[in-house]
Image 1 (cartoon, helix red, strand yellow):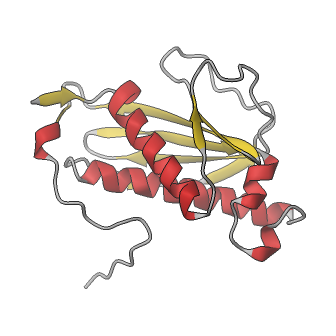
Image 2 (cartoon, one colour):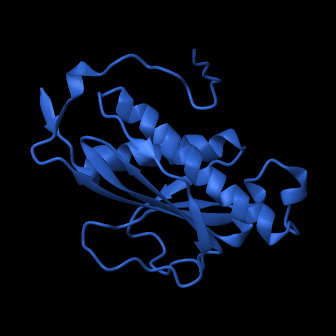
Image 3 (cartoon, helix red, strand yellow):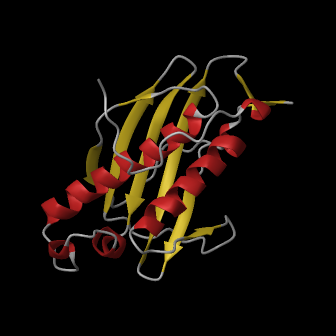
Length: 180
């Protein structure tokens, strides 16, 4: 059975699973908040913007973190609560790169290939993308902060994903890859 690619469903689920797995690797059990949870948005400390493109889809991923989460998620001891701004800035960029990498691996299983750009990290205060009904953030909470992920996607007209034709698992996030 074919299922039409819908950023509100398929990619939202892929992104949510990738985000939960990513933070889980750093010892943080994030919980996906639904739209009825806490209508007040947290003050985001830093956000990372990373673009991607491919034959069938292109878009932008934005990852925003509160100040607390930008510190406790970093496994480097120097990145604790008093870490310098540069260390946190680099870390938020790295997290967005890892998150989009996990999404890329999931898309490859369905024959969708994307090429990633380098992330740009910005101050996150007053972060508010242009209002569009279809571009709502995925919100995540953890005891020490919050995160939000926006995924703005454009697909090739008529693109469909054959859910039954899922490919091999492929590499896991963090696996070393060797090229000849």
